[in-house]
Amino acid sequence: MSFLVNGRLLDKVRYASPGYKHFEIAVPADWLSPDTESTVAVDVDKLYVSPMDGAKFGFILTRIGFLR
Image 1 (cartoon, rainbow, N blue to C red):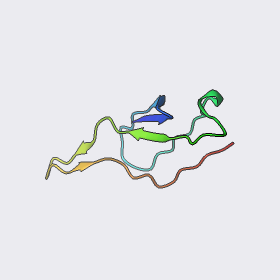
Image 2 (spheres, rainbow, N blue to C red; image 1 turned 135 degrees about the vertical axis):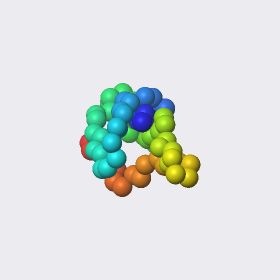
Image 3 (spheres, helix red, strand yellow; image 1 turned 45 degrees about the vertical axis):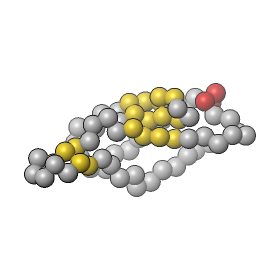
Image 4 (cartoon, rainbow, N blue to C red; image 1 turned 180 degrees about the vertical axis):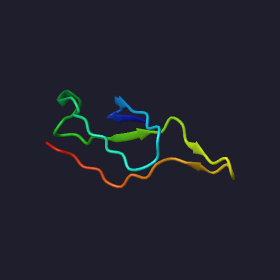
């Protein structure tokens, strides 16, 4: 998974097992501006494909937060 802030790559993480995961990292201050809207994106590199029926699975975002 690639985590992006305002189109810039913040970090890439590979999760090799299912289950709840926690991702937390500081965003460089110069990537943000108090007077403009920021975007946060997650790009899934490879979806899990079920060998049974070919169904594709990604992830479910259950919580997101920002600290200042």
